[in-house]
Length: 141
Image (cartoon, rainbow, N blue to C red; front, side, top):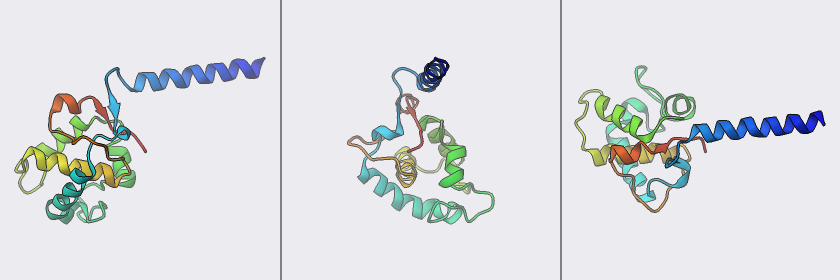
């Protein structure tokens, strides 16, 4: 009986944590929040505008720039909303001209970073609508 009670408590705690992690109306990056075409366009833009600091393989070549994959992605992106990443990138990047790119460029680059980190594409483009982006949580694949 102790094992059964322990199992039920474990399930209840895990269920509570999962339910708490995602608010009603939210979805995750695992639900296909960008298109493959958008991510491909984002890759081209990333290589032209971001790779000189963040590396062609998203491993930073500049010591002041964070990696955008592996542990850098896990610590800086997971658990955040896409809106959070969009706002931060738009305000701070590129480092030599913050805020100089248009919103569609920033969002395409984000789609590429998500796809590079194994998030699946879907049928709808990611849009630079901050209110909609607030409802998308970046989660591990």
